[in-house]
Length: 565
Image (cartoon, rainbow, N blue to C red; front, side):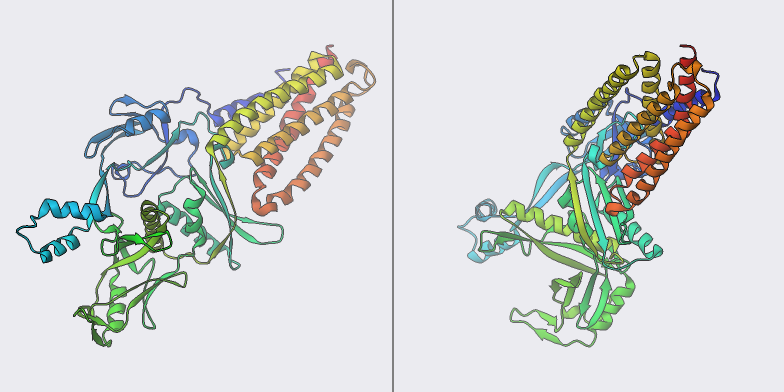
């Protein structure tokens, strides 16, 4: 049996499949999922892994300050004890990095009690006037609060033990299906996909899959899968075209993207605006204002100078002088802010300006959080520029990682029960271990080969792919039963008139069934906007492996076993 070329081919590809899967149940450490922009980890030289990188090739953190990191619990236990301005040595499977932790601060608005406390500490009421106290309240209406140690900027997960890529259904995350407002050609679609990837990376998300999809009606879609991200975290970011521009009168002076030289995202020039602060709106809601600095390109600054050189100057009641027009800011054709222009800027090419906005919430803390989130999204849009077309959200799915882990365990358990059930039914039917064992061997081989191919081509194993594996194995068992029935037709194999003719009859049925399956799967590559693509691909791969690799080997195995029976 082991000298037959068909059996040798099966054994050889099984070895290749194991190499491709690269199982390592003893892998230590935590794998790096992503590295945040401008974080301590990024400055130390740690790079975000590319989405196309195989799981076992990802960089893994093995130790931090000579303390072993064997699990995600070890990592977060170590990080929780870090203090600001401390040196951290991170050892990975690819190198050694040194980074310094930073203090996380937040500028907040003083409440009435805190204002009074400031006055008591800095002034003696017997020697200072009311005017001085009033001035002090204005100067000290904000405070910087330390929030401990800033996050290192690393997103990690338990070290993978194989090269099998888990889809969102099995590892958790967010999947968003979007549809462009207009038909795009190949170049426009490529530009859209690259811009979306860049925008999501700038926002701080990684391990992203952005791909084009379509349905049977020819409608275009974009599917975005982000491991470990929350639905609300990316929903607004993806649905906005991000067409940002500023106008003075009827003149557009700058746009998001190329006209923006720099966008400040550090605490010293971005955050809650102390001039606006936070306050109750009167309907049980709180509102907070934010601001951040940006630098315009010289060309944009010159356009601004041209737009203001002929404007008149008006003097306000407070004595300040401003130009008659304001800079009005628009996002996706909706006004988001307007800024007064000081008379001193008339006709001048100023490159540094501040962008402001706001946020709302049921509590003061919720309003601050919402304002800072809105600021982060606006900063991302300004850096990346607008998308070439507006996108409409068709469907969003948010999958819990806990659910994914439970599903993997249940799938493995039920898979084992299914194989045992198949073995029991086949044994009851044929009453021969010489038939049961080859069928079980081939069925398990097909699963291993299918996973090996998936590891090589980078195919994600999600719920749809698991369904495809079940279909592939089911058709495989069915085909092996057809071969066995043909082999046993009329009695023992040695007494049957022509072995080759029997196998030919069996494979005629098998090829006909395979062709029908292939015809049925091709439309599913596009059905459901491509969401069933994993099912179709996995089914086709599994069926092809069976027909061209494992079924011929099974036919030879059953021939040898039954002839020697």
